[in-house]
Image (tube, rainbow, N blue to C red; front, side, top):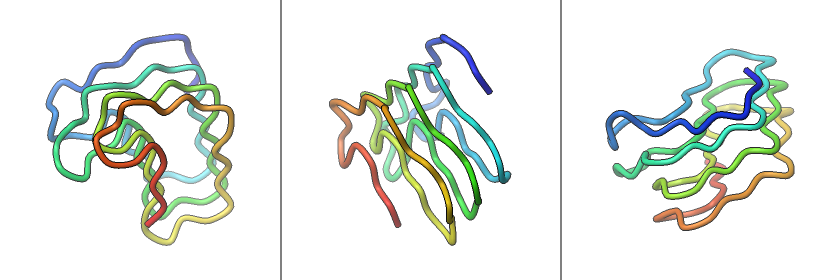
Length: 91
């Protein structure tokens, strides 16, 4: 997924992006509005070899969250501001 697009969560209790597939690239998005408990602008769960770069993940509970047994993921050159808990969370 590559783009220059603003994506607002349709429901604050959902992640904006929920990545559960390996080898995904998320680049150039602004993601906001996932303010429900433990929700993220970009959420990766049990994935490998994903790249999250050049995004703005602000005004969520977590800006970017990497969870489960995720490995070999690259998180680079992102803006994470004004998130309720953490800009980047690794669980």
